[in-house]
Amino acid sequence: MAHDHTVVNTDLESVFHWDYSVKFPQMDRLYENAKRDQWNVSTTINWDRPIENEVLDMTMMPMFQTELYRSLSEENKYQLGRKFAAWRLSQFLHGEQGALMVCGQLVDAVPDLDAKMNAAAQVFDEARHVEGFRKYITKLDRIYPIDPTLERLLTTVMAHDRWEPKYVGMQVVAEGLAIAAFRFMQRETKDELLKELLEYIMKDEARHVGFGMLALRDAVTKLKGKDKKDLEDFAFTACDMMVTKVVDGVPKDGFLSGSMVFEEVGISMKDVEDEMHRNPAWAAAENDMEKQFNSFLFVDTIIPCLRQIDLINDRTESWYQQLGVMQLASAA
Image 1 (tube, rainbow, N blue to C red):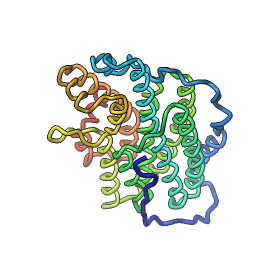
Image 2 (image 1 turned 90 degrees about the vertical axis):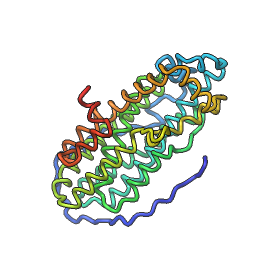
Image 3 (image 1 turned 135 degrees about the horizontal axis):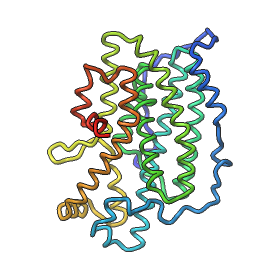
Image 4 (image 1 turned 180 degrees about the vertical axis):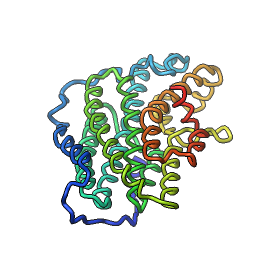
C-alpha cells in the first residue's frame, strides 16, 4: 500500500460517568439486541466455498456495453471484475476500521453510560466487520489503498474534539454510506459467499444507525447558538464529500481512485476518456448509476436522519438543494 498507517491527533476529552442507572430505556434495549445478535465470522459463515468466477454481474455495469470492454481478452475481463470488486470491498474494509476507531473514541467521550455501553458493543461489531472483509478480500484478490475522499472523511471525523460531530459523521453519514454501498454490491454480486457476508454486516449496521439517532436526538436538542450551527455545518461538509463534482472539467470529491483497477488490466485513463467521447451513452449510463447510488445513500438514510435531528432545517436545506441530493428525495 502507498502508506501503511495514518496518525490522527485529537484533543477529545475522556468522561467517567458515576451514575449507573439506566437513563435511556430504548438505548438499553438496543444494547440487549447487540448482545443477542453477535455472530462469529470464522464459524457462522462457511469459508470453504470458492468465490464465483464472475464476482460482479458485469451485465449490470454500464461499461459492459462498451467496445472498450468487449476489446479485452477473456482473462482481462475476468480480472477486471474481480479487481474492481476487491477495490470496492477494500473501501468497505477501510471504512469499518474507521468506524472501529471512532466508536472507541465515543466510549471515552460520550457523557452517558448507556451510550458508552452501546458504543462498546459497536466496537466489537466493527472489529468483526474488519475481520470479515479482510478475510474475503484476501481470498478474492488483494487489499487496495484507501480512497483519498474516504480517508479525508474518516480523519475529519476522528480529529474533531467534540463527540456530537463524531456521531453525525460516523453513525449517520459514514454508516449511511456503508448501508447504501452494501445494498448496491449485494444487488450486483453473483457470489453467494459475499451476499451472505453482506447480509450479516448490514443487520449490524442498521442497529448502529439506530444507536446514533437515539443518542443524537437528545444531544442536538441541548446544543444552542454557535454549537448547533457548527454541527449543522459539519453534517453538510461530510455529505458534500460524498458527491462527485466537476470543476473546470476535472472531477473532484466522491470516490474516484477506482481508476487504478483499469490500469491494472491495461486500460489507460486516456482509453477511458476516448471511449466516453465516442460513446456518450456510456457516460450517461455511469451518471445514472451514480444517481441511483446517491438515492440509496441520501434518500433512504441520510436525509431522513438529518431531518429528524434538525440538522436539515430552514438554515441548511438550500445547501443540500444546491448539492443536488434534495432533488433525489423529491424524485423518489
